[in-house]
Length: 313
Ligand SMILES: [Zn+2]
Image (cartoon, rainbow, N blue to C red; front, side, top):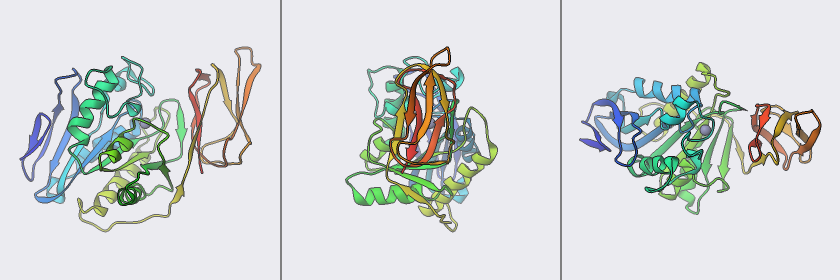
């Protein structure tokens, strides 16, 4: 018997139900897929950000389609990990406390809504797994080229395994994060010795079935590589990126980018401008590094401190 929070699954069984917690009222849908044969435990998240629909669909389809008879080990799939954000259509943040769940890990039992949810997910799900695959995409106001991220840690073997995992999704750009993003799922998992990757595809509040299939196929390929699914692992050419450089808005206003996702930019190249409500330029923005534009905010309305774009180098 595999016990996962308040739910359990026998060997060879798939169970779907709601994960519930004492600390919070939210209940999270989960598929528990318990293989007949022994193997590692894998956790798959979708919807840590509630408007990243393509990744939510991908996680849901994986939960539905994976047969416990086909797997060695255990897979827990949580397709909508942040239901309050999903139903509120809340960009980036939990609607109650306006905090980004993917900056709130490992969470706090006595914290705000996102911090409590992060705590529950870490205690119940991340601590109970060997591998974490966290599916994301561009949020409602973001365009992106598919990319994956793993955490670079002091543990070179763990870093190597996470890099391998992140490189098997049929996605060209793979970013090794050196820790500028705090409170993320994959960084928190890595700190606890878990092999982890975040994978991003889809964008702008659109359910893109072709990108969902990309995430599903990539996840199944990664599951083959760690022996949870039987099958040959297919490798794909990747570009390993060392830096992931974000530019943020210094003021509110109207954002006019002049570069596109996937475009190569040079350091000091003009990337866009923010104007006031009369169309007068408040500030022009220039690339702080040379590299590829991995994501780009496409909303005309911009608030102070909002991300504008990120460049991978
Ligand atoms: Zn996300």
